[in-house]
Amino acid sequence: MTAHRASAAPGSPPGLRERKKMKTRIAIRDATYRLIQEQGYEAATIERIAEAAEVSPSTVFRYFPAKEDIVLTDEYDPVLEEELRARPADEPWFDSLRYVVTKAIGLGLAEEPEVTRLRTRLMVEVPAVRSRMMESMSVTGRLLCRAIGERTGRDPQSLEVRVFAMSLMGGLMETSLYWAEGGHQEDYTDVVDRAVSVLEHGLTPGNPEAAGTPRMTS
Image 1: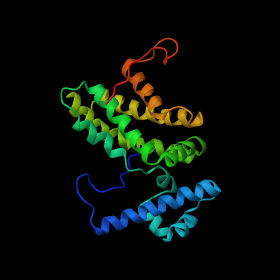
Image 2: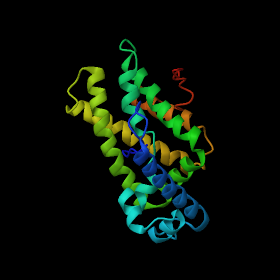
Image 3: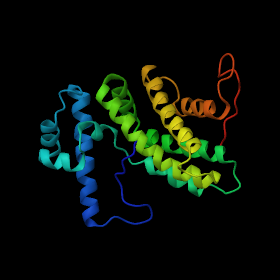
């Protein structure tokens, strides 16, 4: 998940101009992923990306300030904040958090599995991508602070809320790195669930999988 949003506001059908922008953005992303898979990250220069997407380099920069942004931008980040606000008011707030985090991750994995794997692999292999992801997640964390504050009745700018939100963001990033370092062999949603359980329960002695922390089902 990143802090960038690439789609129109929920519930409002995009107009012609917005559809054209979305088409251009998708063309740039698709060209980037294709070039990276065929030639490697360094060889996928902005000039080559622009040529493959049939746009100018200046157009690429207008949509994405840096090549790392092309790699990291997705459609699913807003789900986290919106879905957390939409959960039932009487639901335990951490259950709500677990549900929306799993849903946001699951959407990306279900709709773009190869892109998700490539993105997480590049986070491991390319320091610039990993650094940009950290910057993006700090923005996402600030958005999440608002939703957590509303949900818990706490000041969203309080130290406690900020520490928790950024702990979650950092945990999700480490989860992505862990998953990619293992060759994407484990079920990603299970790995995410384990990470969220660490925030909920803290570290437990021995094998975390043997601890039997129950998963919440939707």
